[in-house]
Length: 137
Length: 407
Image 1 (tube, chains in turn purple, cyan):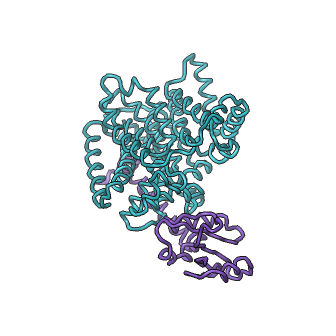
Image 2 (cartoon, one colour; image 1 turned 30 degrees about the horizontal axis):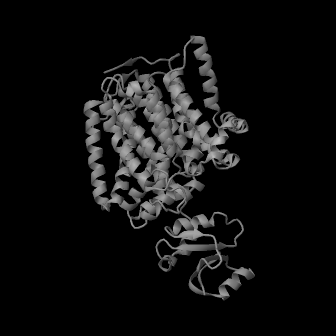
Image 3 (tube, chains in turn yellow, green; image 1 turned 90 degrees about the vertical axis):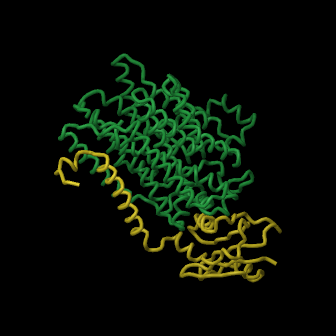
């Protein structure tokens, strides 16, 4: 196409406007990926949970316990990453599987007792947390 | 109608069609490649049809004005793109986690879709229509990934096209008013944060805005009724509130939409989205707000304290979060008084929609305090883009009219 000068570029032709919009979406997505290149909190949880899916049948219900200060969003992350597993509240005698997320240096006695009285199906750890899938006997 | 505005609206209708076809393809276990071919065929044919029957060549406008328009557009787009970088949350906010992207996770895997679309679904809000979730899931599946960039791209596109479309639709009438409406949105952090939240509120707001833009052209070009009804179909398919907005819009514009045999083009654009919506509603669990209605909640209609609470919340939102709309409405009322005329039909449609939302809150079976605090600022975004457009269109009659030479 013949270049017709500045006024042509600034003529608001539809292809120019569309190119501008397309370019800005590409630029925004590019910088979005740059901004979140280093693993964020949800990404770290996702990596920590890698591999647990094969122990969880499709559509199963799971109790999730997490004793982390400021971890209010963690159940949300876990439900999202483990789709379609359904997170449920513990009911007496109702659920036999629990996913436990504990700080790596935790001394919480309740969590320790739960690990000691159940069998570990799967576990993983990162620099912050231990992820343990337990089956209660 | 301007070509670039029509192209943006076409893109939105195509996105809506994509999510509808994708939802149907899940129901009949169609491979995603076949869905993609169907979408591409629809995109090509509908674009050609628009080009033949509706598209208008860009009119030649005074070079100085066009240059100014281009500069304003460029500045606005740069501002939005730059601000988006600082305001964007990676995975959106709460509802994106629990509803829109979460639903997309189910839809992106055909074997999981049954857990979402079922009468006994345990997923939060499984009755919410699938424009956003279906579009995201389609692209995820097509690219064999569940990369969050897809959700972000859709929310950024929405953030961008709302002010841009308002500007493009108005700058030839009055570049000052168009620039003001455009830049007010472009620098408004409250708008940008809500739009980048990866929710479905702004996509619904955009589809409703498109309906107003299209309706203006229905008289000149009756076949624009097809496009108008198609974007109304997108409203229906984006959020449950879209059904109310669509109903109000159709009822108050029935003469423009159905008169002089226009009901045929209307149905040709609306029938498919309506059928898909009905099929979805028959397959999904019913809405919690309807499910929890009983005699007790129906008595809320006589509880004046609830009206007071909703009114206070509405005024608070207008005064703190939507100041431009509040000032615009006051200025518009003064303009109507000075010119001794009644407000136009578009404003009446929007006022009726606002009243509709008002009564949704009055009758909500949930805690009213909680419901108002968690949703009113988002919900108002369904109609705020249309308010801005309709008010700006009214003010654009005043001065600075461009000399437009239609080619």
